[in-house]
Image 1 (cartoon, rainbow, N blue to C red):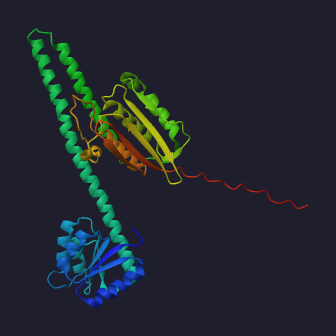
Image 2 (image 1 turned 180 degrees about the vertical axis):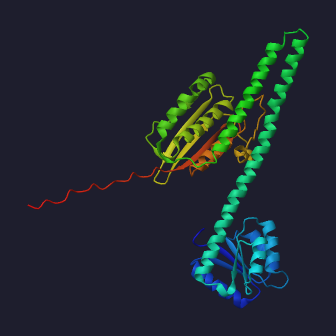
Image 3 (image 1 turned 60 degrees about the horizontal axis):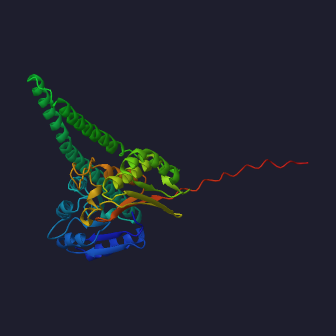
Length: 373
């Protein structure tokens, strides 16, 4: 949580609002604290400003704190909400927690330490709930999209198997080899989908992070894409750098390899080209991967990182539709960021930002004890 949070106190009693605000001022120096006496106006305030936490009085006219919590929770699923009450009984506490409040604090127990602890706990709890909710939604979308993509090669395998069987029963063998080729292609596509599914799942585990040399990572990428580079008669231009970054070298090789292959694949230039630049400072290492390919329309620059998003048909450009999703997950797992800038028809640049390498610790050498002569 930021040390200067944005807070909202909702209470029909002016005296209680002022007292709560004074306590919050002491608990969070520099915090921005808004007050509201009308519970019916709270939803509009929350829609207009991203409050870090709101504190609601339970006993208010027009709408009590539990009813207001229910309304807010339906609109703002991860908003930290603390219910304040002058009653403080266990039954109300259970109803409040069951009704969606993040925490509960009797007004008689409010002091600097209790309100600071309760707000910190509520914000942390809602932050974790948001992460879990987003991961669940992402996995559900991924599973749905993957199931859809699995069906096509499975249908093709079934169709060509039946066609081969029909021809063999009829004593006709002319189309068997052709059908077997299509069958093999469908099987490979299915295998590729299984591979990316495994990679996607494994990337939910935190990777080991360490300092690594960008030059070594780029050398590995060049070696791995060499056959495809020769096939496309393309160029892969990399700097001669000694720059070090903080991350996981294996993941970075996979990310850079994916971006390089994409730049060569989605490309209609006579000489497909991918160029990598590396710039580092004391805070971060920035890697730009630029190609002269077909480019991406501005409207799709955020969608390209979503699971199984394809902007072109499989017959036009091959691919699983998961490469950039995996690249984004790998970069986020290393504490970095990735984004794209592109001009349709002119090419794209993928920007990657990783933490700078940590300085090596210098161990103090123990001096031998002084000799007494």
